[in-house]
Image (cartoon, rainbow, N blue to C red; front, side, top):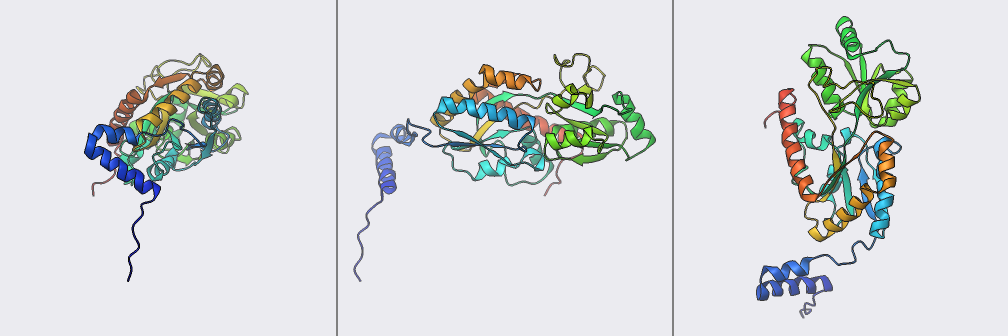
Length: 335
Protein backbone atom coordinates (compact mmCIF):
# COMPACT_ATOMS: atom_id res chain seq x y z
CA UNK A 1 0.00 0.00 0.00
CA UNK A 2 1.43 3.35 -1.06
CA UNK A 3 1.96 5.92 1.66
CA UNK A 4 0.87 9.50 1.09
CA UNK A 5 3.75 11.90 1.77
CA UNK A 6 3.15 14.18 4.80
CA UNK A 7 2.70 17.80 3.79
CA UNK A 8 2.36 20.11 6.76
CA UNK A 9 -0.46 22.63 6.75
CA UNK A 10 0.28 26.31 7.27
CA UNK A 11 -0.31 26.11 11.04
CA UNK A 12 1.93 23.02 11.11
CA UNK A 13 4.63 24.90 9.20
CA UNK A 14 4.42 27.80 11.63
CA UNK A 15 4.79 25.47 14.59
CA UNK A 16 7.73 23.70 12.96
CA UNK A 17 9.45 26.99 12.15
CA UNK A 18 8.89 28.14 15.73
CA UNK A 19 10.39 24.94 17.10
CA UNK A 20 13.43 25.26 14.80
CA UNK A 21 13.87 28.88 15.83
CA UNK A 22 13.81 27.90 19.48
CA UNK A 23 16.47 25.25 18.84
CA UNK A 24 18.64 27.54 16.77
CA UNK A 25 18.34 30.81 18.66
CA UNK A 26 16.97 29.89 22.07
CA UNK A 27 13.74 30.78 23.92
CA UNK A 28 13.92 34.48 23.03
CA UNK A 29 13.30 33.77 19.37
CA UNK A 30 10.38 31.48 20.10
CA UNK A 31 8.87 34.15 22.37
CA UNK A 32 9.08 36.75 19.62
CA UNK A 33 7.42 34.42 17.13
CA UNK A 34 4.63 33.69 19.64
CA UNK A 35 3.65 37.34 19.88
CA UNK A 36 0.17 38.20 18.53
CA UNK A 37 -0.15 40.17 15.30
CA UNK A 38 0.14 43.92 15.66
CA UNK A 39 -3.31 44.25 14.09
CA UNK A 40 -5.18 42.91 17.15
CA UNK A 41 -8.12 43.09 17.26
CA UNK A 42 -9.31 42.17 13.79
CA UNK A 43 -12.87 41.30 14.84
CA UNK A 44 -15.31 42.20 17.66
CA UNK A 45 -14.40 41.53 21.29
CA UNK A 46 -17.07 39.98 23.52
CA UNK A 47 -17.38 41.35 27.05
CA UNK A 48 -19.37 39.11 29.38
CA UNK A 49 -21.33 40.84 32.15
CA UNK A 50 -22.61 38.62 34.99
CA UNK A 51 -25.79 40.62 35.58
CA UNK A 52 -29.07 41.03 33.67
CA UNK A 53 -29.50 43.68 31.00
CA UNK A 54 -30.89 46.97 32.26
CA UNK A 55 -29.28 47.00 35.70
CA UNK A 56 -26.85 49.67 36.89
CA UNK A 57 -23.69 47.66 36.24
CA UNK A 58 -24.92 46.54 32.84
CA UNK A 59 -25.67 50.13 31.81
CA UNK A 60 -22.28 51.47 32.89
CA UNK A 61 -20.53 48.55 31.21
CA UNK A 62 -22.33 49.30 27.96
CA UNK A 63 -21.07 52.88 27.99
CA UNK A 64 -17.58 51.59 28.77
CA UNK A 65 -17.79 49.08 25.90
CA UNK A 66 -18.88 51.73 23.41
CA UNK A 67 -15.99 53.99 24.37
CA UNK A 68 -13.48 51.13 24.29
CA UNK A 69 -14.74 50.19 20.82
CA UNK A 70 -13.55 53.55 19.53
CA UNK A 71 -10.10 52.92 20.96
CA UNK A 72 -9.84 49.38 19.59
CA UNK A 73 -11.29 50.06 16.16
CA UNK A 74 -13.58 47.06 16.65
CA UNK A 75 -16.91 46.59 18.40
CA UNK A 76 -16.98 45.46 22.01
CA UNK A 77 -20.14 43.38 22.29
CA UNK A 78 -21.89 42.93 25.63
CA UNK A 79 -23.20 39.49 26.54
CA UNK A 80 -25.16 39.02 29.78
CA UNK A 81 -24.91 35.84 31.81
CA UNK A 82 -26.80 36.43 35.03
CA UNK A 83 -27.32 34.09 37.95
CA UNK A 84 -25.33 32.22 40.60
CA UNK A 85 -24.52 35.47 42.38
CA UNK A 86 -22.52 36.87 39.46
CA UNK A 87 -20.15 33.92 39.07
CA UNK A 88 -21.32 32.48 35.73
CA UNK A 89 -18.68 34.39 33.76
CA UNK A 90 -15.94 32.21 35.20
CA UNK A 91 -16.81 29.06 33.21
CA UNK A 92 -16.88 31.28 30.11
CA UNK A 93 -13.34 32.51 30.73
CA UNK A 94 -12.13 29.05 31.68
CA UNK A 95 -13.32 27.56 28.39
CA UNK A 96 -12.57 30.45 26.02
CA UNK A 97 -9.53 30.68 23.78
CA UNK A 98 -6.81 32.94 25.26
CA UNK A 99 -6.78 35.25 22.26
CA UNK A 100 -8.27 38.44 23.73
CA UNK A 101 -11.62 38.15 22.01
CA UNK A 102 -13.42 36.93 25.15
CA UNK A 103 -13.17 39.00 28.34
CA UNK A 104 -15.39 39.43 31.37
CA UNK A 105 -16.24 41.63 34.31
CA UNK A 106 -15.14 40.01 37.58
CA UNK A 107 -17.42 40.88 40.52
CA UNK A 108 -16.54 40.19 44.16
CA UNK A 109 -18.49 36.89 44.42
CA UNK A 110 -16.08 35.10 42.04
CA UNK A 111 -13.41 35.43 44.74
CA UNK A 112 -15.75 34.14 47.46
CA UNK A 113 -17.59 31.26 45.81
CA UNK A 114 -14.65 28.80 45.60
CA UNK A 115 -14.28 28.98 49.38
CA UNK A 116 -17.98 28.20 49.92
CA UNK A 117 -18.49 25.34 47.46
CA UNK A 118 -16.47 22.99 45.31
CA UNK A 119 -16.04 24.47 41.84
CA UNK A 120 -14.11 23.51 38.73
CA UNK A 121 -12.74 27.02 38.21
CA UNK A 122 -10.39 29.28 40.12
CA UNK A 123 -10.49 33.09 39.72
CA UNK A 124 -6.71 33.41 40.04
CA UNK A 125 -5.56 30.32 38.14
CA UNK A 126 -7.99 30.67 35.23
CA UNK A 127 -7.75 34.39 34.44
CA UNK A 128 -5.36 37.07 33.22
CA UNK A 129 -6.07 40.47 34.79
CA UNK A 130 -6.60 43.46 32.49
CA UNK A 131 -7.46 46.33 34.86
CA UNK A 132 -9.59 47.32 37.83
CA UNK A 133 -12.42 49.68 36.97
CA UNK A 134 -14.42 50.91 39.95
CA UNK A 135 -16.23 49.98 43.14
CA UNK A 136 -19.87 50.20 44.10
CA UNK A 137 -22.04 51.89 46.70
CA UNK A 138 -23.99 49.27 48.61
CA UNK A 139 -27.00 50.21 50.66
CA UNK A 140 -30.07 48.92 52.48
CA UNK A 141 -33.40 50.22 51.19
CA UNK A 142 -37.04 49.88 52.20
CA UNK A 143 -40.28 51.02 50.53
CA UNK A 144 -41.01 54.70 51.02
CA UNK A 145 -44.06 53.86 53.15
CA UNK A 146 -42.23 51.30 55.30
CA UNK A 147 -42.30 51.75 59.08
CA UNK A 148 -38.57 50.85 59.19
CA UNK A 149 -36.53 53.99 59.75
CA UNK A 150 -33.20 52.52 60.89
CA UNK A 151 -31.12 49.38 61.26
CA UNK A 152 -32.30 49.10 64.86
CA UNK A 153 -35.88 48.89 63.56
CA UNK A 154 -34.90 45.90 61.40
CA UNK A 155 -33.21 44.13 64.28
CA UNK A 156 -36.14 44.81 66.60
CA UNK A 157 -38.63 43.37 64.08
CA UNK A 158 -36.49 40.29 63.49
CA UNK A 159 -36.24 39.72 67.24
CA UNK A 160 -39.97 40.12 67.85
CA UNK A 161 -41.06 38.07 64.80
CA UNK A 162 -38.30 35.53 63.95
CA UNK A 163 -38.09 34.55 60.28
CA UNK A 164 -40.78 36.98 59.10
CA UNK A 165 -38.44 39.74 57.93
CA UNK A 166 -37.91 39.33 54.17
CA UNK A 167 -34.68 40.72 52.74
CA UNK A 168 -33.85 40.66 49.03
CA UNK A 169 -30.29 40.63 47.68
CA UNK A 170 -28.80 40.20 44.22
CA UNK A 171 -28.04 36.53 44.88
CA UNK A 172 -26.79 33.95 47.34
CA UNK A 173 -23.17 34.47 48.30
CA UNK A 174 -23.03 38.05 47.05
CA UNK A 175 -21.59 40.85 49.17
CA UNK A 176 -25.05 42.08 50.28
CA UNK A 177 -25.99 38.55 51.34
CA UNK A 178 -22.75 38.00 53.28
CA UNK A 179 -23.02 41.39 55.01
CA UNK A 180 -26.62 40.81 56.08
CA UNK A 181 -25.77 37.33 57.37
CA UNK A 182 -22.96 38.80 59.45
CA UNK A 183 -25.13 41.60 60.87
CA UNK A 184 -27.96 39.29 61.87
CA UNK A 185 -25.91 36.31 63.04
CA UNK A 186 -23.95 38.54 65.41
CA UNK A 187 -27.25 39.21 67.18
CA UNK A 188 -28.61 35.69 66.99
CA UNK A 189 -31.36 36.86 64.65
CA UNK A 190 -32.87 35.31 61.54
CA UNK A 191 -34.40 36.67 58.35
CA UNK A 192 -35.92 35.23 55.19
CA UNK A 193 -33.46 35.67 52.31
CA UNK A 194 -34.96 36.33 48.86
CA UNK A 195 -32.28 36.16 46.12
CA UNK A 196 -32.75 37.94 42.79
CA UNK A 197 -30.68 37.67 39.62
CA UNK A 198 -30.36 41.40 39.10
CA UNK A 199 -30.88 44.86 40.51
CA UNK A 200 -33.79 46.07 38.39
CA UNK A 201 -36.23 43.27 39.24
CA UNK A 202 -35.16 43.36 42.89
CA UNK A 203 -35.75 47.10 43.28
CA UNK A 204 -39.15 46.85 41.58
CA UNK A 205 -40.14 44.09 44.01
CA UNK A 206 -39.01 46.09 47.05
CA UNK A 207 -40.63 49.33 45.93
CA UNK A 208 -43.89 47.43 45.31
CA UNK A 209 -43.80 46.01 48.84
CA UNK A 210 -43.37 42.41 47.71
CA UNK A 211 -40.24 42.26 49.89
CA UNK A 212 -39.71 44.25 53.09
CA UNK A 213 -36.04 45.16 52.60
CA UNK A 214 -33.60 45.30 49.70
CA UNK A 215 -29.81 45.24 49.78
CA UNK A 216 -27.94 46.05 46.61
CA UNK A 217 -25.53 48.39 44.90
CA UNK A 218 -25.96 51.52 42.87
CA UNK A 219 -29.10 50.48 41.00
CA UNK A 220 -31.30 51.66 43.83
CA UNK A 221 -30.34 55.29 43.11
CA UNK A 222 -33.20 56.17 40.71
CA UNK A 223 -35.72 54.58 43.08
CA UNK A 224 -34.35 56.48 46.07
CA UNK A 225 -34.13 59.78 44.21
CA UNK A 226 -37.60 59.20 42.76
CA UNK A 227 -39.12 58.76 46.21
CA UNK A 228 -40.06 55.09 45.81
CA UNK A 229 -37.47 53.76 48.25
CA UNK A 230 -35.88 55.02 51.46
CA UNK A 231 -32.14 54.48 51.97
CA UNK A 232 -31.36 53.46 55.55
CA UNK A 233 -27.59 53.00 55.42
CA UNK A 234 -24.64 52.62 53.04
CA UNK A 235 -21.59 50.35 53.28
CA UNK A 236 -18.77 52.74 52.36
CA UNK A 237 -15.88 54.15 54.35
CA UNK A 238 -17.58 57.55 54.38
CA UNK A 239 -21.02 58.97 53.67
CA UNK A 240 -21.78 59.44 49.99
CA UNK A 241 -21.82 62.80 48.23
CA UNK A 242 -25.20 61.96 46.78
CA UNK A 243 -26.94 61.10 50.08
CA UNK A 244 -24.93 62.91 52.76
CA UNK A 245 -27.66 62.51 55.39
CA UNK A 246 -27.54 58.70 55.21
CA UNK A 247 -25.15 57.07 57.73
CA UNK A 248 -22.70 54.26 57.04
CA UNK A 249 -22.57 50.88 58.74
CA UNK A 250 -19.11 51.82 60.00
CA UNK A 251 -20.19 55.00 61.77
CA UNK A 252 -23.12 53.17 63.33
CA UNK A 253 -20.62 50.89 65.02
CA UNK A 254 -21.10 47.75 62.92
CA UNK A 255 -17.46 47.66 61.79
CA UNK A 256 -18.24 46.78 58.17
CA UNK A 257 -16.98 48.52 55.02
CA UNK A 258 -17.80 46.92 51.66
CA UNK A 259 -17.14 48.51 48.27
CA UNK A 260 -16.59 45.38 46.11
CA UNK A 261 -14.21 46.78 43.48
CA UNK A 262 -14.42 45.02 40.13
CA UNK A 263 -12.45 44.89 36.92
CA UNK A 264 -11.92 43.05 33.66
CA UNK A 265 -10.05 39.83 33.00
CA UNK A 266 -9.23 37.58 30.06
CA UNK A 267 -8.66 33.82 29.98
CA UNK A 268 -5.50 32.34 31.42
CA UNK A 269 -2.61 32.45 28.97
CA UNK A 270 -3.74 35.50 27.01
CA UNK A 271 -0.54 37.03 25.53
CA UNK A 272 0.85 40.10 27.32
CA UNK A 273 0.77 42.14 24.10
CA UNK A 274 -2.97 41.48 23.75
CA UNK A 275 -3.57 42.35 27.41
CA UNK A 276 -1.75 45.65 26.89
CA UNK A 277 -3.96 46.56 23.93
CA UNK A 278 -7.08 45.78 25.94
CA UNK A 279 -5.75 47.56 29.03
CA UNK A 280 -4.92 50.75 27.14
CA UNK A 281 -8.29 50.84 25.38
CA UNK A 282 -10.34 50.23 28.51
CA UNK A 283 -8.26 52.60 30.63
CA UNK A 284 -8.98 55.37 28.14
CA UNK A 285 -12.66 54.42 28.18
CA UNK A 286 -12.74 54.26 31.99
CA UNK A 287 -11.38 57.79 32.33
CA UNK A 288 -13.46 59.25 29.50
CA UNK A 289 -15.75 62.05 30.77
CA UNK A 290 -18.79 60.28 29.30
CA UNK A 291 -18.08 57.16 31.34
CA UNK A 292 -17.28 59.12 34.49
CA UNK A 293 -20.63 60.88 34.11
CA UNK A 294 -22.39 57.52 33.75
CA UNK A 295 -20.69 56.19 36.88
CA UNK A 296 -21.74 59.31 38.79
CA UNK A 297 -25.39 58.44 38.18
CA UNK A 298 -24.86 55.52 40.56
CA UNK A 299 -22.50 57.29 42.99
CA UNK A 300 -19.43 55.56 41.57
CA UNK A 301 -15.95 56.85 40.77
CA UNK A 302 -13.11 55.29 38.76
CA UNK A 303 -10.83 53.12 40.92
CA UNK A 304 -8.19 52.32 38.32
CA UNK A 305 -5.50 49.70 38.84
CA UNK A 306 -3.22 48.52 36.04
CA UNK A 307 -2.84 44.86 35.09
CA UNK A 308 -0.09 43.98 37.58
CA UNK A 309 -1.61 45.90 40.49
CA UNK A 310 -5.04 44.49 39.74
CA UNK A 311 -3.57 40.99 39.70
CA UNK A 312 -2.11 41.56 43.17
CA UNK A 313 -5.41 43.00 44.38
CA UNK A 314 -7.24 39.94 43.07
CA UNK A 315 -4.96 37.65 45.07
CA UNK A 316 -5.41 39.77 48.19
CA UNK A 317 -9.19 39.71 47.74
CA UNK A 318 -9.21 35.95 47.24
CA UNK A 319 -7.31 35.47 50.50
CA UNK A 320 -9.50 37.98 52.37
CA UNK A 321 -12.68 36.27 51.19
CA UNK A 322 -11.39 32.96 52.56
CA UNK A 323 -10.99 34.57 55.98
CA UNK A 324 -14.51 36.05 55.85
CA UNK A 325 -16.05 32.74 54.83
CA UNK A 326 -14.21 30.87 57.57
CA UNK A 327 -15.23 33.46 60.19
CA UNK A 328 -18.88 33.11 59.21
CA UNK A 329 -18.71 29.31 59.18
CA UNK A 330 -19.56 29.13 55.47
CA UNK A 331 -16.42 27.31 54.30
CA UNK A 332 -16.91 24.20 52.16
CA UNK A 333 -16.36 20.88 53.88
CA UNK A 334 -12.97 19.25 53.37
CA UNK A 335 -13.04 16.32 50.90
